[in-house]
Amino acid sequence: MPTGAWSVYAKTAMLEYAIPGSSPTASPTAFWCALFIDSANPDDSSTNTEVAVTGYARFETVIGGVTSSPFVAANPADLDFSAMDPVTVNAVALYDDDTAGNCYAYWALDAPLIAVAGVIIPANELTLEGERF
Amino acid sequence: MSIEGSWSIHAVSACVSYVLPGFSPDPAPSAYYAALFTDDADPDGGGNTEPTTGGYVRKAVTLTSSGLLTYHNTAHLVWPPISAVSIAGLALMDDLTAGDAWAWWNFPVALDATGGIRLASGELVIRLSDTR
Image (tube, rainbow over all chains, first blue to last red; front, side):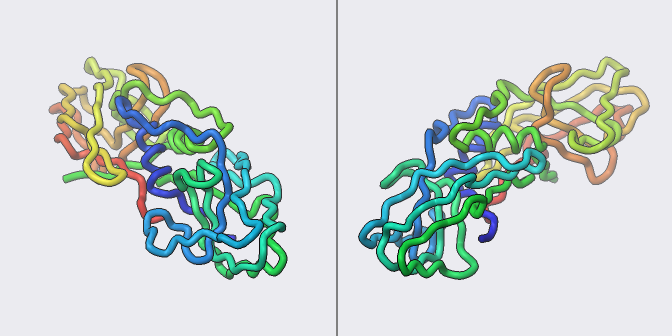
């Protein structure tokens, strides 16, 4: 899976954190992983269709540090969507809510995940970098 | 003319940590001070030699938004003559005398400080890419 992209929402929060006098949006308290059948890019929301098959629910996801310089983070544990019905997944995103909320990062998959009997995203598949912007 | 700066690794780590649940980011800066460097302003590289002569001090800087994910220096920055040194770059520090660098610029051509340094409002631009 390619390295994830930060959303403009997340970048705005990052930037405002670094600007004295700004009031950045509050830090998220948790992330949930969401699956999409087309695009997960929240900044081009015209085709963001989240999976809605039986057994699907966003999966609470921890993102941990991998390296500090450059900064790289990833999911330390598998993300288990094995209970959902068959569906084709083309993108993955991290939200700050289990059903709605704001998207912080997203991954457009190089090849679709064909979920015949659910999907498990292995540990360290969702990577995020602290690019030098 | 404006010059686009770069964020330091310190800034990137702090800002990314801010948006990751469970991380403890370094404290946000309460103010920025512009520091001049005679060699290289990149805090993650070599150089970082600040002038020590001619009454040189860092100058307080405020930043103003100038579009999506983009900020620039609000007001002009002026230093009086600083003996016979050339200035290769500038960094935004979170302290008047020490602290961490959050962003930095190396000038395309070194500035002669013998007649003082003047940077116009909007000359220092810092942004985040909106493409990834």
